[in-house]
Length: 90
Image (cartoon, rainbow, N blue to C red; front, top):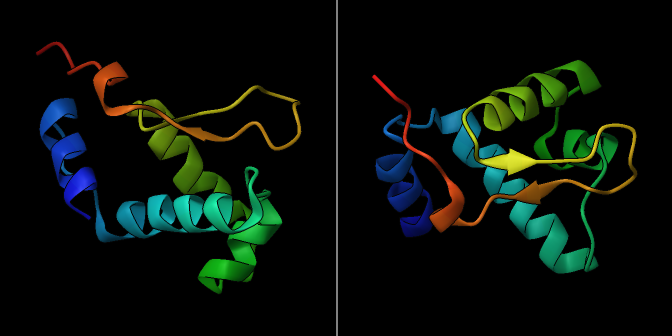
């Protein structure tokens, strides 16, 4: 959780509890499986009933620079390293 707090400061934007929980789920599933989780795996892990909810969180995290993925690629979801997150220009 301390890593997420450091990321908050770097990005200049606080994460919601839901964002933090999604990042934790990505980290846990990737660590357990050895590869990136799918939207459906994240959905099951978080107890959501729709993949749309997971995609909404992933889009938020991508738009703020916390995760990346290759569109159309399978299992390409990655958490962005802390030193790669660019603070927003205000």
